[in-house]
Length: 212
Image 1 (spheres, rainbow, N blue to C red):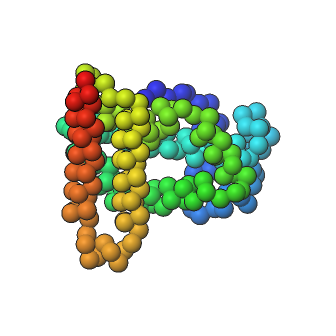
Image 2 (cartoon, rainbow, N blue to C red):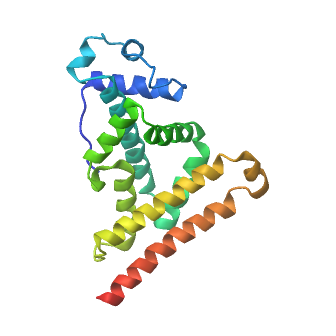
Image 3 (cartoon, rainbow, N blue to C red):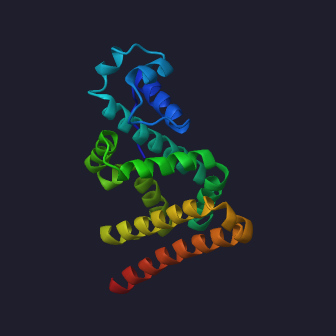
């Protein structure tokens, strides 16, 4: 997972946007002045790096996803197999609730018709699957589980990654229902999700071997 080095002022802007967003700022009404004040740079300077506010906001949210996924991937290398790695992702989701709220806000943002949303969707469309942070991370985890000799099709890999994403999203939604948590807890649900993801990977691998 290679990462591009960004200018310090761009990183300062991205950090400011994420902080304001996490604190509850409405990105559609957030001003460039508020962002640059938080970032500690001049308002005019920001246009040396961004064409408009929407590009700035979309870039910040995308960059935050990239940083989180990179750091998470690095931390997962100490885990021995896919089951343990998925389990650690779920445990991290449980302990980092604020980041989860931010992620849900981004998801909601992707579905509305604001200019920020359009810019963010455009940014995602410009990226290939392998360049999308979450997709790239999950693809690497699955490929490492299968091993170098495994040659499943791109279609199968897409299915496995999307299947894993959907289960992570469902778990995030589950964690938001406090009433349900008090009755069922997280341990059993977490274990079921880990088993289901691993079983799906094994099933696709067996199907590929039978076709070979």
